[in-house]
Image (tube, rainbow, N blue to C red; front, side, top):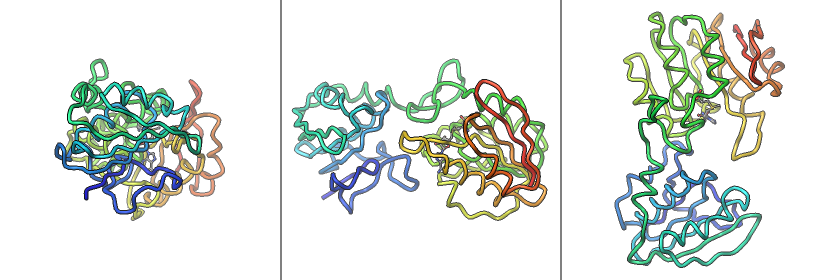
Length: 299
Ligand SMILES: C[S@@+](CC[C@H](N)C(=O)[O-])C[C@H]1O[C@@H](n2cnc3c(N)ncnc32)[C@H](O)[C@@H]1O
């Protein structure tokens, strides 16, 4: 019996313990698009909040399910859960809907014939985004634009030197700017989102770049880098989580050599100063604008 899981549904939904994890937000998981058609017996999906991303994931799960296979999907009511039933019916499914723990849950058996899968898969796939001139995919952070904070940081970066890292690199917007300096010898691009890493690989075609699909907070640190750039996340599963950015600051300090520099942008309301001062010898606030602040911190 082949069972797949997408994401980490709350335990009240009794997620299968032995399923193959397929969420791109869990490093090492199996990408949904690598599963062959009709080879899966059961799928449990914690639906992502974005419409295009969600329909893409559901269409892939249905493509991979065999006829007669069971699809079990749940989503927070105000994060797409209340739209699930209609979205699944549009694929030609007969849906049983229930409510539990602020989620809507939809269960369906995959019929022989389903409709609209190819369109939903194409709409949510990795593509070269017009106007952005970069590869990206719905679901990646700020997938079809350049984030205002990253733009502000890019405008404040000097020509960097030596070996560095871009923590939470997304599709690679900041790294592209960093690598314009010929004095940069190596750059590690790290992100928790496997889709972002795939996009960054295409956008940052540079022999000095290396890519890692990983959780920044738990990576081993060698204390040998000259610089780190980052626009750290401050949302985890939709809720604001300041500890996330604070964890990024501690990790940046651990990865840098003594005298190495962190360049960081953050939303102005986030209280990162104490964490920066605890981990770095000198912290200089550089610029504020558009709701963001930039820091240069020397270890
Ligand atoms: C604010 S975005 C910045 C993205 C990119 N640097 C840009 O400028 O477009 C933060 C990034 O951190 C990633 N992220 C979130 N949690 C992470 C974690 N624990 N480890 C590594 N990356 C993480 C997100 O996937 C997202 O791409």
